[in-house]
Image (cartoon, rainbow, N blue to C red; front, side, top):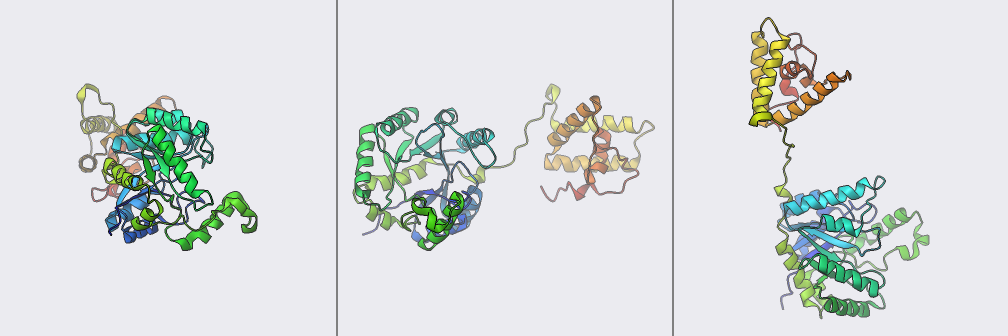
Amino acid sequence: MTPPAYAELQVTTNFCFLRGASHPHELVAQAKTLGLSAIGVTDRNSLAGIVRAHLAARDTGLRLIAGCRLDFRDGSPSVLCYPTDRAAYGRLCQLLSEGKRQAKKGRCLLDYEDLLEWGEGQIVVALASPDIDSAFREALALLKADFPGRAYLGLNRRFAHDDARRVRLLADLAGTVGLPLLATNDVLYHVPERRRLQDMLTCIRHGCTIDEAGFHLQANAERHMKSPAEMARLFPDQPQALANSLKIVERCNFSLDELAYDYPDEIAPDGESPQDRLTRLTWEGAARRYPMGVPPSVREQIENELAIISKLEYAPFFLTVQDIIASATGEDIPHQGRESPATSAVCYALGIAGVDPVLGNSLFERSVSASRA
């Protein structure tokens, strides 16, 4: 019998410091070997492992779902968060940025209210707290109300003595609250053999020896990537919890391939384009620099540089720097350009640099070239 298709959507990489014990490319390769439909990288309060995972998934042809695990300081249950489109990914990035601004380096402080502020377009999966009590049930009901049609309850096994009972309790609770279940294995490494490394990372995180670690360590080596057949065996009574992984994959249409660097729009009065404004300011500045007339060699250099700037669409950046320099000059703040652009004819004309290109002999293309972005 062919096992049902399944996507593992709770994967921690080694970019989750001292928690994940496998590189993104190892996790992607193992998922492909096991026949998983997709994986979701969910490092804690971080998107750090997404880029390496994306590159590996693109090379192997595996579908990758970008996401992260969000831990809250206000006692709310942790959630897995998956943006469904590029705009939602931007909001998730903003959410994480806000959390990191409020904390010391290496930490991220978030409350549930922060998730609500930036939660548009996110699919969220609540992770079971140690105590499945009335407070947890109320938190699930709130999550369902705040994220209608986009909230799930995570379901996994720990192979503890009360494992079967805990799974039943969570399934019953999901039914009571009206949340669909999502089965995961909460992956920390790609193969069982990495468990020893994961134990060592845990000891480093807690500042203890392996003999002192006790319950800080995982009880077994089951937090590795599992095949669809193995996951179906672990959840024989919850086939829909496995099928829901594919539903989430279908709804998450964002890919890192959509991202490109977009320089902020520069303010240009009267509808003037950034390139036209830069060209005008450059020639006006050149006329001031050379009141007796712009030397032919400088004129040729300016035209060449403006052509390169236009091709690379760098005009907004040059205008930003020119605005900063003008402000600094007005406040009598010392400033100085550096590297090859410091001897650029455009930079000299704009007042960004003070080296006359007639006297200099530096190549503009050394730093700004049409052959490389």
